[in-house]
Amino acid sequence: MGLSQEQLAEKIDKTPSFIGQLERGECLPSIETLQALIACLGIDANMLFSESAITEGDVSELFDLALHMDEKKRSLLIEFARLLHKTEL
Picture 1: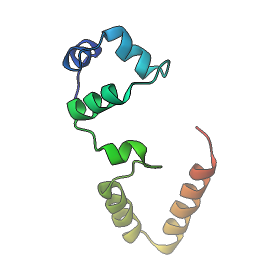
Picture 2: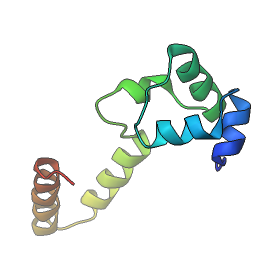
Picture 3: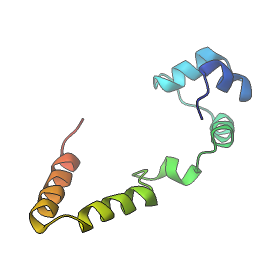
């Protein structure tokens, strides 16, 4: 959406400082503030609470890429994905 902290704060009736604290993980929003953020940013609330925010587009793109690879490349892609899954970034 491309809002500045100031713009977002104004839209949900909070201070820019509070938005900065949220972004840095220094505080948690109330249920009311969370609802305001979801509405303002157009976020799917289910995605916030899911274990992974993978979209259908992500899955489709990965599938299309894998579909057009030979067996060796596809095996490497799967091995790489498993390695990424185990690694903390």
